[in-house]
Image (cartoon, rainbow, N blue to C red; front, side):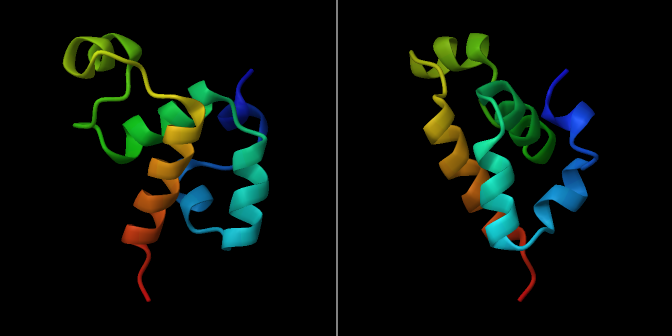
Length: 79
């Protein structure tokens, strides 16, 4: 079972967490968990390995996924 099935968080509540808690949880996530959230948040993005290889010639690494995830959350926060 992945992060989303065991953590008790859904995509929305996860994105609304304070930054410190968010970082702790992200560190517990796998690359696949991160990609799952990215696909939910940005369905037009290129995150699936097959699409990424075809369009970009490589796959999204875990660290790249974390960077994108954090940026998307920050961009969507209301100040």
